[in-house]
Amino acid sequence: MQRLLTSAPAVGTVCGLEIAFSGPGRPWLTTPVRNPVIAALDVPTAERALELAGHLAPDIGALKVGKELFTSAGPELVRQLRATGAAVFLDLKFHDIPNTVARAVEAAVRLDVQMLTMHTSGGLAMMKAAVEAAEAAARQCQRPAPLLLGVTVLTSLDDASLKEVGIDRPVAAQVEWLARLAVRAGVRGLVCSPQELGLLRSVLPRDIQLVTPGIRPAGAALGDQKRTLTPRQAMAAGADWLVVGRPIVAAPDPRAALRELLASLA
Ligand code: C5P
Image (cartoon, rainbow, N blue to C red; front, side):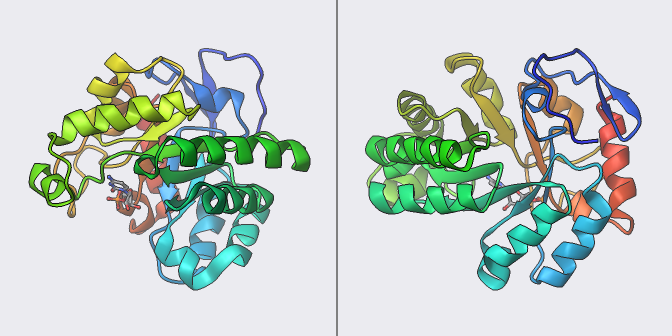
């Protein structure tokens, strides 16, 4: 099922469904990641993560490992997840001095993750060091460089919280500022909320890949997400990748929930 396509056909086949994704870009067709849906493994233990991976691996685009799971289960879990055949998105949001972030990115590439994150507020030099480290390590390991994504302003922050840390600009202006800085550093993708898709699509080069959480299939519980889009709406608004947690991982049948979500993109 995992295919490495070099040309981008208009239609992809995902779990037996012919899917013509409505987003303007189809980057998953030219990467080892087979479709745009990323399941956030927001679970506390390796056992639960591996159980979910067993259900999802045949059809998922990538499995996202965040700080909670990585801190409790570590690199060995990432290796085990990769062994299922699924791509891995290591969401540790690196932010440190350039050398430290570069070495961490290098370690992530050696671990064979396909996507990873860092904070754009770490600065131009830090981002450049990270991009160079990702490419050099990938060359050494003879595998495609992972998609290194920049995080701009966390959605938990508002204008007042930015002021508290000395940033006297509205959130949207700060998101745009950091996104442009990331592009200058050679970063190829950004994580953004559904609300930021329109802004970023209008100001960034089209080949910058946008990864969007806050996705809820029609009728799904919102949980603590306040402003959501359906998978189809998010792709139409310019998302290249969709991060989906609870609607898949907390579903009674995660694989069926994933398949239904993929079908909604067809
Ligand atoms: O369960 P749910 O679909 O809300 O999970 C969304 C995932 O995306 C979680 O892993 C969450 O940490 C992540 N995320 C988010 N909002 C952001 C950045 C990341 O929901 N702004």
